[in-house]
Image 1 (cartoon, rainbow, N blue to C red):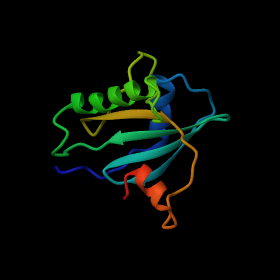
Image 2: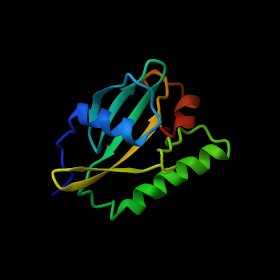
Image 3: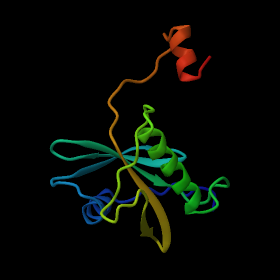
Image 4: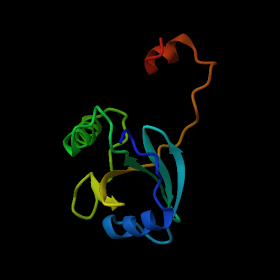
Length: 134
């Protein structure tokens, strides 16, 4: 199956997050966007997070090792001073978690929320170059 598009029950994800991560109640979860992966906004009383659910069946993801490489790279870049958002570690001190849905394992990663605004068409050439658009 090429990239399942079924989203997860948000109540189930909240329960999973309480179980796997050090998050403080109350916790809300809302689907933000479904595309190459599903992204949910997670809200506590004081913090926001983004939960990425990696969709199965992608030709460029052969195993969870490919996802783990991406997450390890983000941590490495962050620890070496680059402005990237590293994944949050779970209660097992891991950056990747696994949830089962309909007999299928799905990999998840939790990230701190990065406040900002969408990029619009009024970028200067200098800004576009810094973002790799020019």
